[in-house]
Structures are given as structure tokens and as C-alpha cells.
Amino acid sequence: MKIPVRNLYYLLLYAWGHFQPGTATDVGADASPDLPNLFAKILIDRTRVLLRRGLDRGYRAESEETRSPRERLLIGDILKRQTLRRGAAVCEIDELTNDVLNNRILLSSLLRLASCSDVKPDLRHDLRIVASRMAGVSKLRLSANLFYRVQLSRNTSQYGLLMKICEFVFWALMPEQDGSSSRFQSILDDEMRMSAIFEEFLRGFYRTELRDCHVGSEMMSWSASAIDSNHLALLPAMQTDITIRSARETTIVDAKFYREVLGGGRYSARLRSAHLYQLATYLAHAQRREPARRIRGLLVYPQVHHALDLDYEILGFPVRVSTVDLSAPWRQIREELLSVQGEGKEDVQHFASEFTGPRRRGAPSGEGVVAPLEHSGRGKAASIKSNEERDGT
Image (tube, rainbow, N blue to C red; front, side):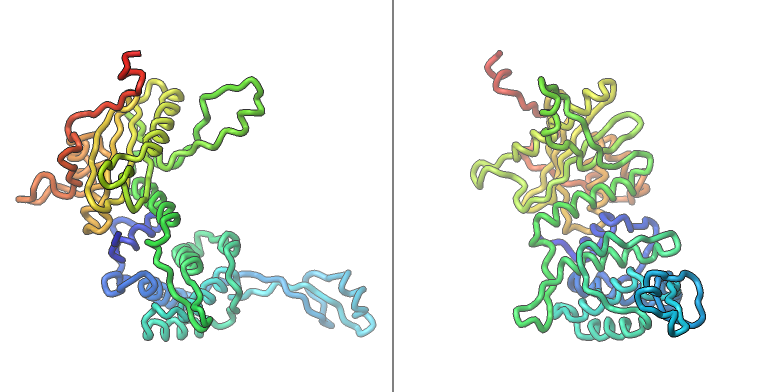
């Protein structure tokens, strides 16, 4: 599976909640051959902006022995060190400094990325130059828990995307065998991470684009009972990937990132049963919780070999299974995602007109929508029946 670096950058922006529709910023996505060079350029450009505006500053407590006491006296240290005999006291003083956690993470990430052999030499040089301009900021050994400790306010929101990139770089850089440099691990080779990114991307995309809907992930309670109530605590959590609530219906979206969308082998390709079982369970519990509301299901995969656009009725619920071509131009990806969330042709035209404006003259009517397979049964609902129904029981 190949995803252009520009599209991959958009995926990450939506997943991180930093995509701003209606704005255009040149970050060199077309000139960057891959993610490490793109991230290097973004870190360089945005850190330069921070340096021009002034780095974030915060108060840090420092203790000192002084003959002119000020702020907080550390009585324990005074008694332990017997400073009164020397006519001095130990005080704790709050110093305003640039050496705060977010700046230290940024500096350390700049230097780590500068040691990556996948980054172009000129960008590696610029990374070191920018890092050298962060006077008063000290390096630190990066670890996963440090990124959870970063607290940003409205005044420091410009650090948000930088911290996300720094965290991504932290997980992606792998040391070389000789230890002299590092290499950038391809994210597309990590199916588990791409699954999480794909899910967060779809959630962020629909939250941004469908402004009249409530979009989020929801926890659902099992419709279950037990003789011993303690047994219920062993049931697994049931949480949807994406739930889209509009004024008239609820759509439950399950995002699946697989190298092979269909299972069953080469000669007996079928949809993966576990995915349908999971989505059907969500739909049944959602309907039980809101019996008067219309409930729909949607399975979304990245397109690998063939495009899929399948419509079913499962347990009485409309279910759609679709793929999105992440290697296509971004405008087409956007239209595809808005289309598959729609409710057939009328909804596709509604979303297209609302979010992309009127169709240009001479454009084909199906432009931007994933073409279904010939055997997909497009336009006819395919019903999956249980074995009991087939046997007439």
C-alpha cells in the first residue's frame, strides 16, 4: 500500500485534531519525499516562528544559599546544613526560565531528528542550527511518559502540533546497529499503529467536516444479565470507533486498516466475519438503547487492490461496506468519505453540494465516488440471513 506523503500528512493532521479547513500553509509536502524530511521541515519552520515570537517561559523552583533571604525559607535544609552559623539561609526561589518541559522536548527532538540518516543533509544542518538558537533550554532523555506531562494553554497552543510531531518522531526513530545514527521506521509497515491513526483520522475528519452532527467515540452498555452480578464485571468494554449523530439518525462507523480487506484466501474471498459480527452487535445495542431512532452501520477500509462499495441489510439495519483510496488526490478522498457516510445517491449529492460547492460544468456525475465491484450488488440490498432462517426454523 502506497500513500503519498501529502495525504499521509493530512491523515495525521485530522488524527491529531490540527486540521484547519479553509487555510493553506506551505509546509513543503510536495518537495519532501517522505515523512522524516517533511517533519524536519515543519519542525524547522515552526521553531523559527517560535524563536521570533519568543519561546514559552515558566517558573521553576530553585534552591540557593544566600545572605539575603527571599521568598520561601527551607527550614529543613537550614538545620541540616547549619547555614545560620555562616550567616546564611537556604531559600527556594521561583525563576522565570525558558527551560520548561515543552521546550526541552522540542530541543531534544530536533537533535534526534538531526541524527537520522533518512533526513537530507541540508535539513539536518538546519535542525542543528535551529536547536543551537534555543538558548537556556537543556536537553533531556526522551521517554513516552514525558509527552503525557506536557500541559498547554491557549497561550501555548502553537506547541500542540510540534509536540505531536515530536512524539511521532520519538516512536519512529530506530537506532542503527553501530549506534552512530538512527533510521526512520516506515509507518506503513506498522499495521497496529496505522489502524489507530486511520481510526483517529476518520473520527477527526467527520468531526471537522460534518459540523451539524455530533461525532465521537461512545461507550455502550451490554444488554446482559447474570445470576451473580459480579460476572457482569468480566464482560469486555464495548466502545464504538466513531458514532455520528445527526438530527434524524445515528451512524456507527467501524474503521479497519488491513493490507487485505477480504479474507478467505485468493479463490474464496469474503468479507471478514468478525468485523460484521462486531458491527452488528453495536447496531443491536444502539437500537435497544434508542428504539425510536434510525440506526445505520458503516465499515470503512483503505483501498488496496479493488474498490468496494457494498450495501446490505443485516438484522434489519442498513449496513454499508466501503473502501477509500488513500493514494488518490485529496479532493477525491474527501468526496469519497463524505459519500460513503451518506445514505445513497440523494445524500451523496447533498454532501457534495454542501461541502464542495456546485459541480463544475462537464464533470461526470460519479466523479470522486468509489466505483463498486461488478458483483457487489450496488443498488440492491443484499440480506444476510442466519442458518435458522435458511432452514425455515
